[in-house]
Length: 213
Image (cartoon, rainbow, N blue to C red; front, side, top):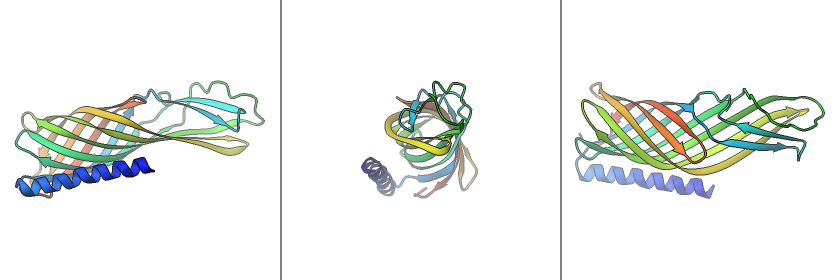
């Protein structure tokens, strides 16, 4: 909890600095909100032990994990025609219901069934965009992923196990901004990497000006 609060203060500070900078430099600040999709390229494996040593289930999140869905909010400050700075927070959720290898579940009374694994990720990151031509840009961002993985299974009774971890992450990406008059449409793709897992991220957001234009 302390770690989450610390990251929350950090992102809050970044947002405050962006607001102050935008007012002082008479430059534009924008807010972007929209959905995100994640295609898992996980390396993460959770060895879940249920009911002492009765059943140990190695869950490989790379196998059978469905596409993840979520949303994000990004505050962006335009430094000049070529460079923007931004701070971003998002929420992603992945599920896994099809396991090809459950390993040794031991000797149990009854049937091991209704197995479902979920992973949620809260990326808190900051970075920059470098514009090239006609709305096309490259981006780089870094920060932390707050990750929670949970396994639910049934062995006569309902059982569950949850693990939490925080991991440094970075993401190179590319995107395109389409000017729609009073606001923009920002579509992008990036490779989200952490030590424990990674995924391809696709986003689409509406961008609204909130600073001086």
